[in-house]
Length: 202
Length: 181
Image 1 (tube, rainbow over the protein chains, first blue to last red):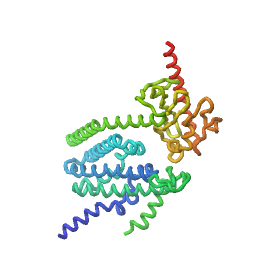
Image 2 (cartoon, rainbow over the protein chains, first blue to last red):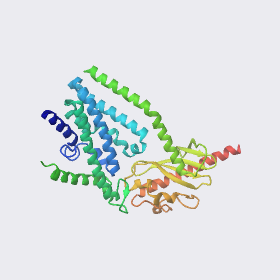
Image 3 (tube, helix red, strand yellow):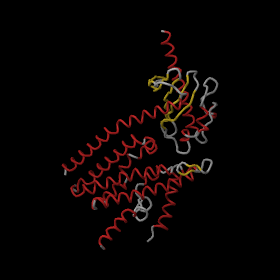
């Protein structure tokens, strides 16, 4: 009973750790390139987060299955091939079924291949944990990443365009700097301060 | 080691090949839908299918869609501020612009990228008559109201339209010649 309970709580932990403790953006500081580049609006951040989560869950699962059979020397090439395959599948599927989303995210979809979150989780977690745990890890970290990107996107969209998820409530242009790169760094920096000062302390 | 890597690559290649075959149709479909929707936006309501053609003007090939009895939708690509700016320009048979729509752009978000969404900017080209108005931004002595703080994008947009009009003229001149023969 106790063992079962422990297992359950550890499973739950895999799902929730991405929000605060192992938050990929604010705590692990991974995957900064898409974080800074795609969060010009809340919807872009959300879509990028979900796309990354999709790749993360599937690559985590496959790598956890493959890991015992893969010799150490070719470990990284095998992981990269697996990740690149899922990214390309995602890219083709998005082009076919959600062409508008694909157009906004464009270049950043193929760049998921080199997103250090995906390879990082493969190396740090999936290759020494079970299929179920790896899938949960993918969901947890993916949700954390999606949440962070959406929050940055919401703040930048409010300040830069006066709207949230395309719903405009402040007339006028907003502060243009927040739509461009400097705004991304400023918002990310302040969020990181707030996050690490108030949320991440134990 | 080699076997393992080879096997993984083989399986991945098979998965990719399969996905490509499955999605090739829908991707082409989506592309065509988008083109059709753009044509419908830039020209008045029309019956029948637009015919895709290519015309050369000033050393560049322009793709355009001719609609019998209505006009032409010309795809015109120029360099904007952040990269190529591709605009579809609908020109009706009397030579005036009916409407324009951005096909792809990489302008600055929140500044030049507004050429896609800002009605105050795009609406001025509806019914634009090149005979009475000049397709240059006001700063350059023309009649185009530029987007605030995005003169380069506005300039590129105006140039794209004026190129499209030239292409339209060339096409019509060729058509006229054919008729005479």
